[in-house]
Amino acid sequence: FVNRTYAERLGLIPEEIVGKSITEILGKDASKIIRPHIQTVLNGETVEFETEIPYERLGRRFMRAAYVPEKDASGNVTGWVSAISDITERKQTEEMLRQRTRALEIVNQEFRKLIDTAPVGIAVATDAACEHMWCNPEFTRMLGTDPGQNVSARGGADDTLPFRMLRNGKPVAANDLPMQRACREGIDVLDEELEILRSDGTIVHELCRATPLREEDGRVRGCIGIFLNMTDRKEAEAA
Image (cartoon, rainbow, N blue to C red; front, side, top):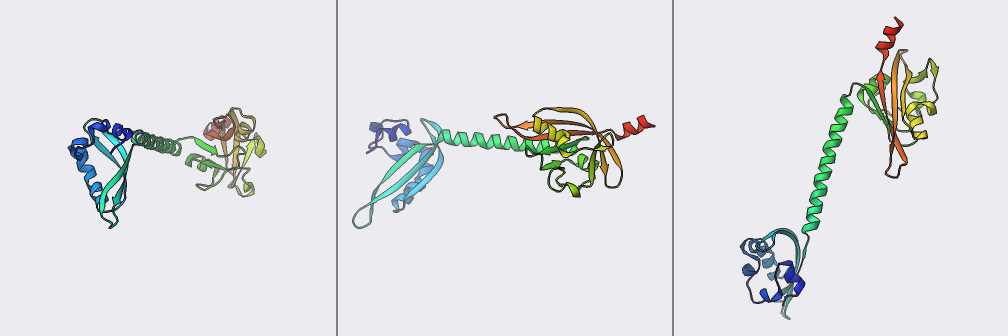
């Protein structure tokens, strides 16, 4: 016995299945793949599996199958009940998602490599309050900080940061820095000149740009800042 849905999974109607051998129903290639599972259920064990099967009528399809043995009073296997479902679309979707994930991983690696080798300072705030910020190697050198250090002036450790931010020689409050303003006001802050006063007394002149990063609904979720070292130019102008 086979119901119509089961038969349709194989590209047939019930009348084309009843009385036929496994090979006649499925084709030689498909029969070879599932025969080990059939032998397992004939040995009295329940079988569940997913596999790609090359059907002669349907082409290559992914199927999920469950075989449950039927036994007599003595425990001898007298047959089995089989249930199958076509999971080809699910498998194709999973493969598409894997490919997209891999593509995103590659893009992320390339983007991070670009940031790490860029000749300008780059900082990224990972929250709208700009309390957690990481920066690329160039900006680390400009600030005189350690690699991987949180460089936010609002991160709770501003007293231990080895630099101070100045504007025309005067200290700038954390809330008035370009990245913090970009997040707070949701605007691009362009071409603002600041000075970095490092703990060793040296001053680095920088040109700053900051732009907010947003969620899909438009809410600001962070910020990215670009910092161009203009110290050589400023010194040349002063000379």
